[in-house]
Amino acid sequence: MAISFPTMAERPDLRSRARDLISMWPQFMHHDPVCNAYFGRVRDELPHLQFFAWDDERDEVVAEANAVPTVWDGKPGTLPEEGLDAILEDSLSESAPVPNVLCALQIVISSEYQGRGLSIRLISRMAELGGLQGYELLIAPVRPSLKNQYPLAPIDRYVDWRRGDGTHLDPWLRTHERFGGEILKIAPRSMTIPGTIAEWEDWAEMVFPETGSYVVPGALEPVEIDREADQGLYVEPNVWMRHRL
Image (tube, rainbow, N blue to C red; front, side, top):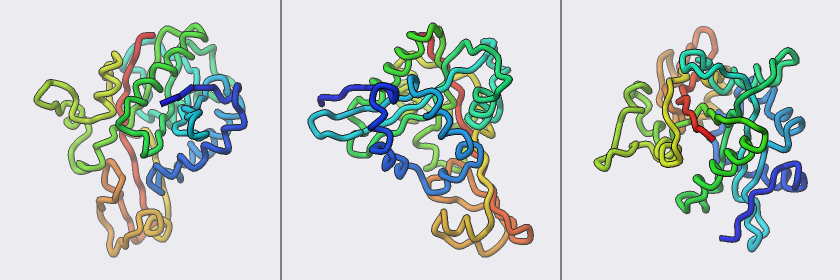
């Protein structure tokens, strides 16, 4: 594969060509109010930390990765319980202090290019960009890629599941671990996605006939439906991990 990893500052023309990659996420993931409020600013204001995987032979964007600088005192306990949502709000706040670490937001890879070693190269490139900014740590609220197959398993137990060779059962956690990443804690409320019953039935493409907890395709945890309040609520846990650059 003739893959290069230009930043958004270097290749702003690729930004529009990467838009189709977001279809990789379940529909409900496009409706986190915090992400919708801040992600555009990340790309606009920090293009030197956003980058693509560009297949020159096919003239195609095959992955995008996003990160923001933030502040962390190095203590696992102080990492926010709200994970991704908190990092977005805090790092783009006008009163945010001088950052000292880089925080990954997402890495999204075209389905055709998954399982071909590209994920490690993307993490490596992100670490490289962090190092160029003088940061010694890369942190990430990681979304376990296989957890949606085990939505009823508590996340703190799930992260302990290992294969026979001792590596993580979860492929994405396993990839981070291979690159030297270490699990620090759970972010139990990394994304919070509210919606009306009608909205959730549209996003999930299923009917919620009564109040209760529902397993929704692509969700890491059950979605809570309250018919009387006309509300569905999904709260997604992520896993805080750390890489030393």
